[in-house]
Length: 379
Image (cartoon, rainbow, N blue to C red):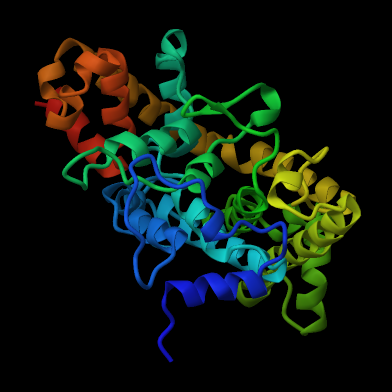
């Protein structure tokens, strides 16, 4: 049976919760477009993200371990795909709009610099007197301005809901999109993508830490959440510390967190009494949340990863090197703007030299940044 757009709208009406975002109710795009006969707005948004250059570049951007340092470590791309999978699971269980949650998840890291969070911190330091740098705001700039696809305008022309979903930290003050003040709370689909990001990196960073040798079974056994995870491996009769034991435990670590997010978020939604998207946006707090127990034990895990992995001496040494490279590239391009890409040069007049250089460097992969550094400074 052929499923046309009207059929998909009808399916949403019958299958989605009253507080889920429906395509028919979208606030639309900055530049109006005709509807597609077979794809909803959020499906089209997802595909535009997947087909963007910025998405493809995520393959060669660092998550934790420098890109190219190991075949099995996560990159920014594999992280993004895992976030999208978790977001779909949570959204489906809660009868939310899966396509919207998935699209926000797929786009959430498009604004990341090369060299992971070390690169972002360095870029923020370099631009601290000129508005700073935030990868969430940069992701919005990528989809609104920096991608070049269409004859009459820059950007991917995504829907309001996806664009608003990329903007976080609203609790720190008023936030605006296209001059419109955003509600305190994002829609539930955006909240799902946000939490899925946290849960995913908790799990896969433990996995990568184990593969790298930075984290061991003995170290992890200090954590309440790991002791919960390994009970399943113990019941299965696996040998403690073995590859199968550790991999199965990581699998259960992620599964426990996602299950808790689903069950607790559902209860939070019921307790809140929300029955519309607007009620969600103006409720007293976020509704896609972990239970108090899991907030505590994931908080322990978060601190553990910072103490023993993210700022481990070996990783810090590498991060210090790449941060210096970014700094030198930045100052070189400021002095030699003719060396930045054509599109970036075209934005100097409107955005200013520093911001144009920042956009250019932020769009680089680790690999290209290294090639540029060697071209400029090692000849």
